[in-house]
Length: 561
Image 1 (spheres, rainbow, N blue to C red):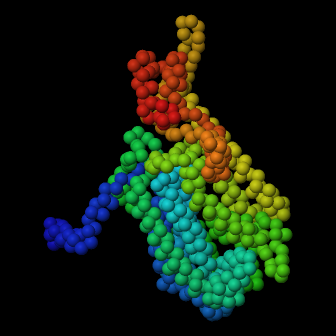
Image 2 (tube, helix red, strand yellow; image 1 turned 180 degrees about the vertical axis):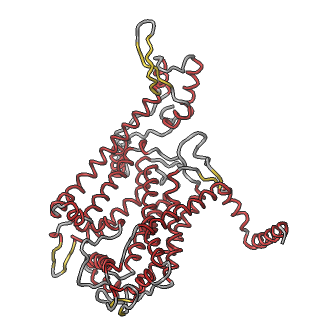
Image 3 (cartoon, rainbow, N blue to C red; image 1 turned 180 degrees about the horizontal axis):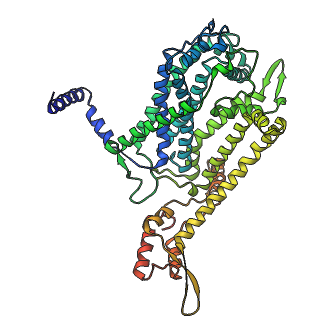
């Protein structure tokens, strides 16, 4: 068939589909959609591509995995396990590793992709947080992203619990302890989840259904909704020449972005495959089948669950007590149930809290530089420090054995550190941001040092500074300078108590916490005063001076104009 005939046939098929679905308009809109180009936006793409790899490799593994706790005796090719009793789930996983062609590397690609998937989501969300990409109109997308992160944690835990080896069984017993710590109804919930007494035979089939059907459907659905909202609301972009809240500067999907995205997918797939080929992960044959009596020494969950284990390990034992015959295990419930609930609630509410404190109802499509939001950046750094300390607590036994330290001393130190170090990180991060803002202010006012010293006829010496070009200066002055709200008046002119006084007082205090420490933006008058001292080598005439002042007036915020 000639090329013309092939094109005519393809066009006929396209017309047939479009006449019945109206897909041409949506496809045209999507292919012309412009996306900005910045390396940090790839973090979300890594998560999306890792999810695709997970779906592909997971489908392969389901062909041979048997989700059953039924007892069998191993007689496969791995000699050390011959004659040992085990579940069908464990045996089928060992068979995939040693008797299915390509099974082991697919298993390892699947596991590494899961780790990369969660890490990419975490990094992507921190990028969104630090740059303020969660602000109006993207608050709902922020909540969707957090929900995706939580689902990824549950999906990962369900996945590495399926092989029924000693390590995954230890994790399940850990989860059972958290369930039992639920006051009053913990034992009933445990019986429902495990289908009776622990460990039972119903859990593996249930986990399999959750892992391969329920959560993947939710992940794909929410991911699709997330991408659709990004397309409808426009993609955020960093401040720069020609970039405003009303446009997007970048490349269209076709052909540039599609080619780059396709190539980046294969890079992610290739790096994950390389990791799977050279770095062993989760060798279940070395752990043996699960037995409720022993616990693997030095057992650790995947990294993203380590902070929960650390939170439980660091809590003191005296938080468990009995009241009227009921046992309350708050030494587990606080770290395993209450703390994650608090963290999730605060994270989801943060965009709405910041909007309430600032009173900012505008749409934001330009991102903040983290230094220009010092309190927000410091809160993010503090949360990372808090996570790292809890994560270290989850591995206190490994730290003790590898560095020949006392596990009791490590635990005691971390119990104090989780309260002392995050606030210290907050203060340091905020001071760094304010210092960087001062440096930016100095660059705008005085330019870049040239190293040339000039002596004036009357004897004065000064170093000549090279002024910033208008684009570089605009990036340093385009952000808003928020100021604390004044304390609310207790009564109005008639002496009547003002409505909502308590909420207004809380808002004013939070506003003072957010914005009391700040660096004011450069005003045109300040810039003119700095230039009048003759410190800019390139500013030689009144006309040029007026042009620069006009530029600052046009691009600065209302507070500086």
